[in-house]
Structure formats: structure tokens, C-alpha cells
Length: 275
Ligand SMILES: Cc1cc2nc3c(=O)[nH]c(=O)nc-3n(C[C@H](O)[C@H](O)[C@H](O)COP(=O)(O)O)c2cc1C
Image (cartoon, rainbow, N blue to C red; front, side, top):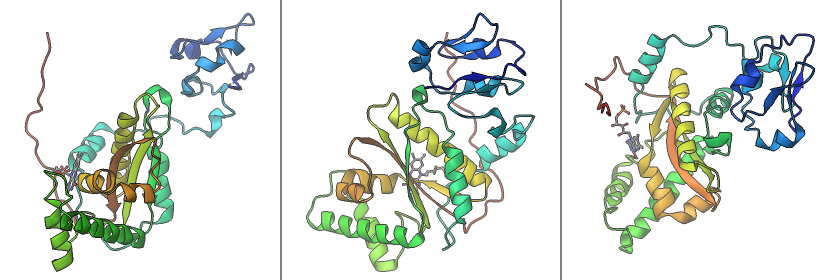
């Protein structure tokens, strides 16, 4: 049940909800007000565009009230601010040894949850390590697993370089894998949804930018992904990543112990203007 409801007192019958519905299931009913036929309800994307576009907030769907949405009256960051964020975002490899404020931690995930997903499936799962001790335990487990694989000559061809990181950890307590970050985010999504890999990566990109706008450092962590997902499946299982999920990516994060004074300069974009 969609519970598509229209406040007939405030609805101006402008038809914007009808025109914007991606599934094209909203029609103007005989009484002149928007409506969705019961037999069309299953086609709904649940995207809430009708609720979002209605100027007067006259539409409620899925039990959601327009008044509970964030109003969009010029509240976007200006383009220069966004450009500065995109160009100023850096991979952070040095962190303060402190957990994030739990409210901020939750806020980062709640906002990233608004990233788009294919067919609006919204099935991305955020597996998080919310305490630095948990990341330290994971690091020890991963390092021990890698030592075992190296000793048994079981590191796959091309992955022998992990031995160097284990050595650095064991001899000098230098952590190239997790970079002493207090937190870890893993995205995964059910294989059966339309775009599981893309959904995971988009959610993580949104997470990263929002985190960095809050002064939180982040690092796309391909080394940890390779170790957890490819080399040590028992660790993937122990972390509770379901078997029927595509493993999206791993991101380390926490309060940075570095500050970048300026952006980098990426020179010209590679652009192909097709005929
Ligand atoms: C998909 C992906 C995987 C990455 N994996 C790692 C990693 O395992 N370890 C690491 O130190 N940096 C990793 N990075 C960070 C890149 O090295 C970094 O983005 C690049 O050097 C440019 O630096 P910047 O992010 O500060 O602009 C990764 C980045 C991406 C996008």
C-alpha cells in the first residue's frame, strides 16, 4: 500500500506531480485531483518525487508527511563551496586516535543513505566499525591472516606485496593497511538488485564528501578490501557481510591528524567529444 494522499484543501491541481512521476502512474482523477490507481501501485519506484515536487506540500505517500522533509529554499551550498570540497578532499592517511562523536557518526551514515540507487532499490548495507578498538582487533586478525598466507605460500600471484605491509607492522608498528584510522565503513548490497556495485560506490562517495565537509578524514581502502574480501573470506564472514552480497568497498575514516593548506591541481580533464 502506497497510502498516496492528497490534501484537497491546499492542492492547486497544478499537475506537477503527474508530470514528474517517473513511473507515470499518477493521473488527474475525475474530481480533478491527483490519484494512483490501486492496480498501478506495484509499479511505484517509491522515489517520493510527488511529495518532493508539490509546491504546497499537499501530497503524502508511504505515510510520509511533506512537513517532515527538509525545505529546499536555496539551502544548497554555493557552487564555489562545492568545488572547494571536491577539489580539497584528500585521502587521509594519518588519524587522531579518538572515536568520532557518535551523533556525527550516525549523521554521516544517515546522509549517505540518501545517495541514489538503481531503480531506487536502497539496499546498500553499511557495515561499520564504530570503535577504534574494534578496528585494532580487525587489523590484528587481518595481519595474522596475511602472515599465515605468506608463510604457507598461499598469497595469490600479484598479491605478494602484502608481505611488505605485514613486515612493516610487525617490525615497526607502521599500519599501511588501516592507517591507524579509528573507524571503518564497508558497503555491500544484495546481488539481486539492479546495480549493487554502483550503488555501493555511489553511497561511499557521498559518505566521503559529506564526511570531509564535516572535517572528518576518509580513505578509500583498496588494500583492506583486497585483504578482507579476496584473501581472507573468513574475515568477511566474521564481519557479517552476507554471502549473497556484492562487496562494494572499504573506507577508513576518523578525525584527521593532518591539515591540507590548498587543493591539488589535476590539469585538464580527459574529455572525448563524441560525434
Ligand atoms: C578505489 C580507490 C582505492 C584506493 N585504495 C587505497 C589504498 O588501499 N590505500 C591508500 O593509501 N590509498 C588508496 N586510495 C587513495 C588513492 O591513492 C588516492 O585517491 C590518490 O593517490 C589521490 O590522492 P587524493 O585522494 O588525496 O586526491 C584509493 C583510492 C581509490 C579511489
